[in-house]
Image (cartoon, rainbow, N blue to C red; front, side, top):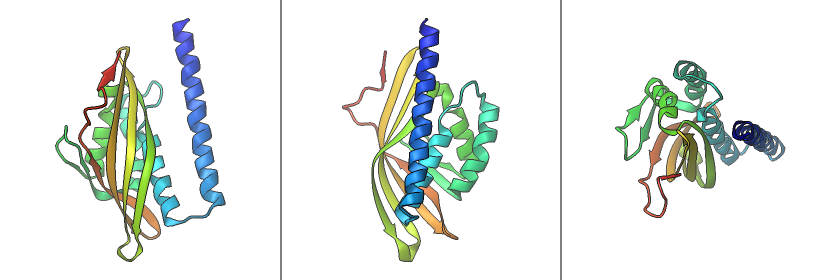
Length: 178
């Protein structure tokens, strides 16, 4: 019964994510393609891509992620996070993203409140966002909420992420919950 409940919850969660994604695309189509809308759509696309897909192994995950990250990231994109060494380039970022389920199991990524600053003359944008990764590993709920700063560059009308800078954990949040 618990297993069937997990499947129902998982299907409901997937359905809710699909509806949210469709609404985001519809909103983007209806309200135009402002730079801010394009930037937020790019970040949502990347967040949705790195979430786990059911029964996906690391090799197939890397194959699925590679073209999405190649399109959404600058070739020399960098990830900075306090717990990790800096990671540079689409190839290394793809390998890192493919390995995340080892630490979070099945997980989803949500982007909360965002603050977007676009510098049109410089073709640059800076975004500060609350990002939450929630996963279940070995029956243990793991939730990590961080402030993440993104720097994006515009080339040929497309916004691509150049830098992902993850802030350290704050003390008010627990690392994991049973």
